[in-house]
Image (cartoon, rainbow, N blue to C red; front, side):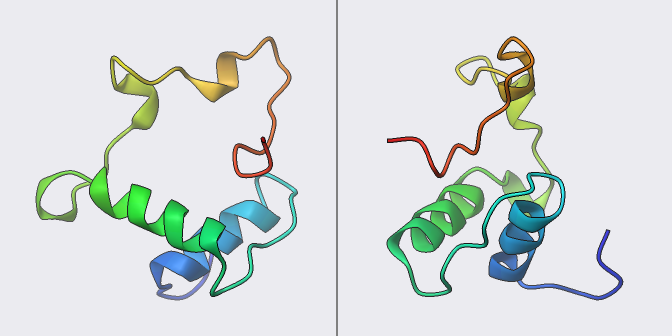
Amino acid sequence: MADDTLTMDQMINFCMLNPMKAKPLEWNSQKMTALAAYVAANSGKGGEAVNPCAMKKMKNPCDMKGNMKNPCGMK
């Protein structure tokens, strides 16, 4: 994990680079804005963390037959 306090955009790129081993998103790109808006809209009340895999409508990306792909890179 990061050793400092990060903004949401910084945390998104941290996750893209480290656990996902993907390219970082451009800071002012449409993908960064969309992903940050999604995280903000689904973060729960009072900024409490929400497990997206526990949501009934969302599928767990880790269960995709062991073939995890970058969701931001899908077309």
